[in-house]
Image 1 (cartoon, each protein chain N blue to C red):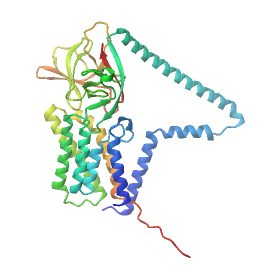
Image 2 (image 1 turned 180 degrees about the vertical axis):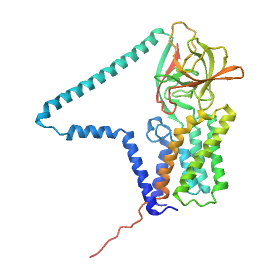
Image 3 (image 1 turned 135 degrees about the horizontal axis):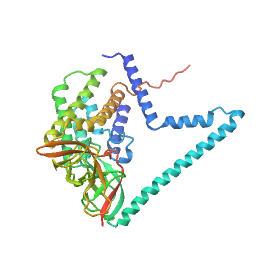
Image 4 (image 1 turned 90 degrees about the vertical axis):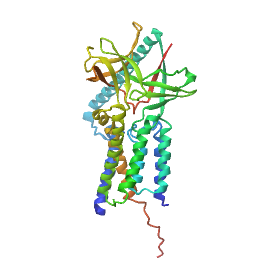
Length: 167
Length: 240
């Protein structure tokens, strides 16, 4: 494992744990970022493997422990997103920054759309209220995912070894 | 496929945007300009008296600001004192310590529990509006549901005519259903917690955002000014 990946995993753990506290609102921009969704999207775009399922489930379970069973709707929509991705998108090549951006937008839209369908059927939520509620989280999740994606996928830790010269 | 150069440009653009965002988000521009003005502004002998006066004005303005804050605080304390004098309520200050970062989360955890006499179904308020209702109480902490939670139920009075209704959440927003059609309710009318005791203070829940007719009744959408994602310091109303 490269140093960069190790650093990324460390930051992800902190990102997931610290955002639970309301005092750490600067990290999740005042509660507008959902680390579980950001991490799911990043894992999906970077190529999902079997070993990624466990951390995703643990993060979702961790967040579920602080809320009520209505949040199962959101968890279900995220898991459905993972399933849809594995089923339909995994086989395509996305080695392009522009395509990755489209994929992030698609992931966010699908996830929130599934939630909308459930909320509109179950609780009669109208589209106006729903958009009003999710617009800021969606924008923030998009930007955070994009920035992290650039850092992870399109940059890497310098691999140049120190060289000793003798004159 | 984007070229390496193009990728580098995009990365630099995002990096610059992030730095700029953080710069303005934390008000660094203010501190920076203030620092520059205080330390590097041009001061000549001719201008010295003016600058001294300007400094004096600035310090006086600061003092006025401080006094205004004190007056505001006094007003708030007086309001609280009125509540205490009414003798029907006790306000317990608390802090939302943990909140699940899920987008549709509707539960918060407070740092006060049975130790402070918190009981189930107590109303939680922020400085301006009702935030939620206590759902579970433990020894040192308690859980509460936000106003948009589907578990939230509260009897409220709407408008100057005090039309009664039950406020509920639907996971996204709050609404009041089954209000009689003949009720005189307009957009912008205030909504308060139902209180039958004459002369006692009532707490605001929100304002009427939209009035719709469905199934022979009025359905009222509630606009609550408190932001459930950003709420941190709250007070719990305890009925004595």
